[in-house]
Length: 362
Image 1: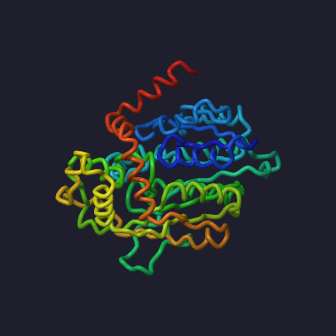
Image 2: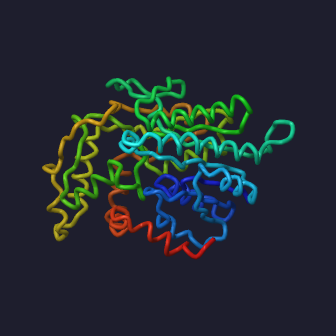
Image 3: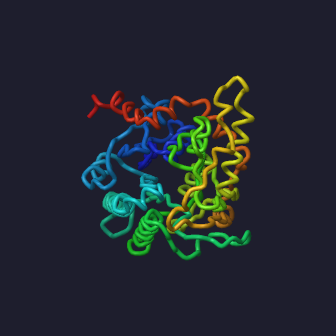
């Protein structure tokens, strides 16, 4: 049985990835989920798989060398999937040091612990061990307003926010381990993810939640900043395929080919909510374009992101399967069906789930 160490598995992308993997491989794999449980980590995302004997949760900080080394010492880890990171640009602008600590130093701890566990006396590594570092397209900076311009794996690294700079730094650390030690790793850089379990500080769940509550819908600048949107389960599939079929040492861009202006996203959400909500639902009256409120643009706000997933398609056969019009509908339906989850997350009560489930466990 292959053992996976997933960092940040209680977060948005991590929890979706764990669901994907257990759905695909069932009991043929063992997953160890390591998460610090910051504000964005929520074990309730994984409550349906608690009790499985091939899944376990360990509350630990990736910056804690002793805790991470202990996990490697007590388990024969075959795969590391490294999601754990501080990920919100606005928070990085206010508190950059937290992002450097988690995203850079935490990645160094993960690399060092994996290297120590996997390295053989002759400097080579045990067979079939792989480390995948999950990163972002934001490390490439900003593209011009040109439909023919895309980020490629060869694009220059040019981060513009403390968040993207910290992720670029962690990418470079992984690359350095690949080049220096021939460490068995890959780097993936994905576009904006959306789907179930996303913390409502990010655009799509924020707009859904505020619209239903009749609150203002904040739009940075002119609202014409462009992002490429990737349905989270398509991303999970790509990560699995890179780990099993990717060429070690290579970087792979994972994009959705779903480019939209931020203001387009907001209008699509409003229109879809109006369509999905029955007339008898009082929240339907709250959903209005009049809620759109333009605010001062974010500092260092990149104008456009667009990823070309040509390499991953050509080498591995992955391509984004979910068109935005379908993925956004699935996402909105999930939030409408899980409003209690949203209420607990926005109130902070989701942390009580951990205390209730794990306070008596060592």
